[in-house]
Amino acid sequence: MTDRRPPSTGPLSHLTVVDLTHHVAGPYCTKLLASYGARVLKVERPGGDPLRRIGPFVGGQPGPERSLPFLWLNAGKESLVLDLKAEAGQALLLDLAARADVLVENFAPEVMTRLGLGTATLWRVNPRLVITSISNFGDSGPYRDWKATEMELYALSGGMVATGDPGAPPLAAGPAVTQYTAGLHAYLGTLMALLRRARTGRGDRVEVSIHESALDNVEIALVEALHLGVVARRTGDRHAMVPWQCYPCRDGQVAIIGGPVRRWLGALDLFGTPELGAPRFRHMRDRIARREEFERLLTASLARRDKREVWQEGQARGVAFGYLADLGDALGSPQLRARGFFQPSAAHPEVGVHEHAGPPFRLGPWRPGRAPRLGEHTDAVLRELGHAPARVAAWRAEGVVA
Image (cartoon, rainbow, N blue to C red; front, side, top):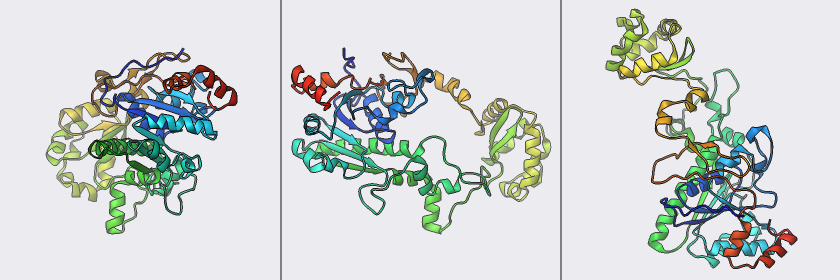
């Protein structure tokens, strides 16, 4: 039996979304739409989204319903399997698009056109459809058709060259930062297109380049290069100001910043080293000039203290100290637990209930739901389109649906 979601009261509950996305950037966009109430119909290729075969897996056991990345990125969606290379599959997709508000895809440029599902065709069946396209380099330019992964896109953004220690190889970010940024940009662009449709009555097309999203993350270094010609280099965590970075302490690393001056001077007593408050270290420019001497005294003091102790005592004195948290620290954070950030999913038929991270912002009901089984909703959705069970069975025998 199909497990259909109960009606939503979320702010996007009036929307129906056709989701042709796979891997990370596109599914994150449609996950946000689903979690805020939209009905998201995830159209998967025969065999399913390749992310279903990427671990880690629940219980360490591989399987198309056990991929943790898939379960996280596709919570709250419905799954149907269509072969979009078959004429019948293309016709069914157009039938879905005719009744939808949004279609999101992250194929390589021109794939949708080659399938007979280009923008002009989609708008012929539904002039109000918002079409969101996500690709590695966008729809134009000499790199348009080139392939890339997260690492290549991060490297090409100019972000990797400045990440790491001086004299050591550059480092990629651990999380798929560019993919999630692109997915968030696609989500915001889709909402903006829907707002414009409310005024004009017509659909729109949103185009997102993951490469450009990666450059957006470079932030101040990008502006500095554009305006001053200064190219960022790897400096590790060595900030220009002193102190303004993570330093070793007894049980890890603690983040210390030396400002604002009035708060910093009032916090010096927590270190138990009076010399840190000597006149030669009073102002930031003095500490910068005597960086090595100052940091030697500071690290000797911190070696006797625990990270949470320093963090809490600094905060009590009005200074924004912190500490280097591992995932255990983050998952056990009293702040996140108090706000209910981690939420249980709906029960999944194969993997049961598991916790999900909560909403990236608070706006009405957030319902993570659960990820769909491959093709779980094919029959139900095609019945809604008016197709008889016998016709669906014939398509299944032909491999058009699954």
